[in-house]
Amino acid sequence: MATIADIRVIAAALPQLEEGISGYGTGAKWAVPRGMVIWRRPLGKADTKRLVDQGLPVPQGQIYAVRTASVIAKKELIDAFGELFFDIQHLTGTDIVLFHLEHIKVDQLREVIIEGWLARVSSTTANAWRETLPGQ
Image (tube, rainbow, N blue to C red):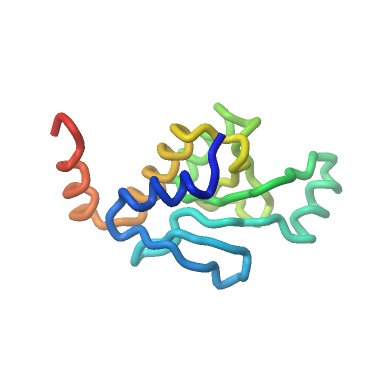
């Protein structure tokens, strides 16, 4: 299962994706000039209360948020991998999905980080990166 070290390795391979500290004091974040791609996103008291009030389990452990390509892509992740990816009321209608870091496989983590990164960088940056991939 994945760790923060895996996030760092994946992020280091993507142009412009820089590690920093979240302005919310929740821990590490990785962002490009156009905004955050992945960050630690612990559930707040209001998030926890809403889940409990809805009779839903409250996720434990390291919770991270990652951008997706769209709200539709977010829904597809939740539908396909509901045991791993989830949403909270605060993020409804956004392209941000939450996941359990300790439950995600490194390959899945790489895929969602790259998808989020591609959604935030310029097409010039994305195309230049794609040209460096094997077989291009």
